[in-house]
Amino acid sequence: MHAYAQKPKISQQKTSTKSKLPSRTHFVQSREANSPPHLHRTIWNQAVQQRLLRADSYPRAPAAFGKPASLRSCDMEGPDNRKGTEGAESIDQDGGMPAPTPSPAPSPIPPVAPPNPPPAALNVTVPTNIRAASTPSGMPDRIPPRVDTPASVNITGWRPRLLGVVFSIEGAGGGNGTATINGANSVDLVASATVQLRGVDQTVPGKAGKLSLVAHQGPTLLARSNGFSISSVPQNWSTSLVNSINEPDAIGMVALNSWESDSKKVSDLDEVRRKEQIEVTTKTGPWAGAVQGVSSWKDATLGSIEDHHRDSPRASFRALGSKIANQVFVFKCARTAVTDIPATNSGLVISRNITSGGTGIFNYDISKVGTAVTANGFTSTAASGSAVAPTQVV
Image (cartoon, rainbow, N blue to C red; front, side):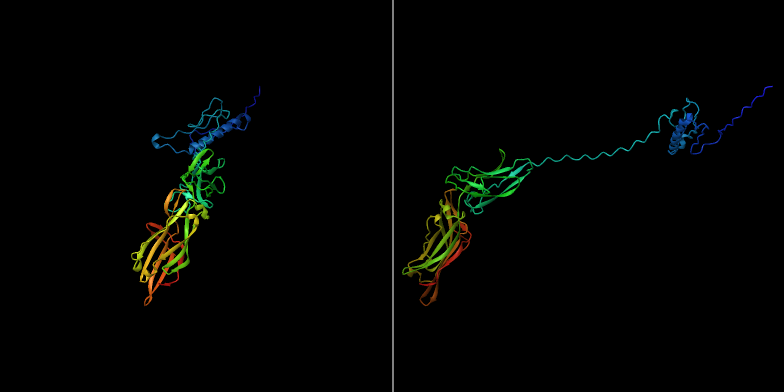
């Protein structure tokens, strides 16, 4: 009789199909799960569990769509059974496709910087009129010799690697006159500045207005002033007493009239002539019917002239009265082809008065004082100085 060894019974765990799954899905794992052949299945189980956990956190479908499907345990036995929980992705036995990584949020698009503005274009200006401050009204543009005349030049838009801007006097020579800029024939600048223009050779008569201040960058002309000349003008009259006129048949005084050249050298006035303009504003008593005389044109290079203020015959002035006259000096210039230009600071007032010094006595007073006046339509600011003669008895 053979004895049979009784096969040991393997207890098996049964999962009740009637129990409901909790909110978090439970998985049954074989006792062989830790064995090497089943290692990949374990990893696969964990991946699916993570999927289900994420799915459980999503909002539930509305009741109108019916009850959600029951979750099932995953079948880990057999390489061909790849079903997982409903709604989960199928993953192959060897680990398959990992859970997808959420796409990163798109990076913000950086703002596009505006393009750099183009550099400003080079712009150069020179004064429209090259005109010394000493130039009287009514005279064309000119500057004197020997002294500086400031001129503001403007440069904008210059930048490194550009050529400098060269300023010079166009038309110089040939009788038109010559001038320097900052003591040279030209000056090279890269920024705005005030340059000093100085006349050297005066303009020859008949050649006026042919000089210009110009600006070049290389061969390109950038700016040009209006035409001007080089010439000197008389200005700044003054007066002083030379002596009284006390003659048997005349009475009055001699005053010295002096003037300057705006070039600081009176000999530069070689093409200038000057004369007086006198307008009587008051005349009474002995002067009521007097006729006023004036001088003719005189060379301006003289620098000064004795001005004789004489009343005669003397016996005619033994009566009360007065005479007041305005005096202004004018000039003409051959270099700039102008005439009758009022000289700056040349206005004077000449006063004569006869007053009583007692019975049969008449006192005569005469003076000349620098004053801003108009004479015969010519106006000038005041000359300097005064000439006052002592009182004489007529």
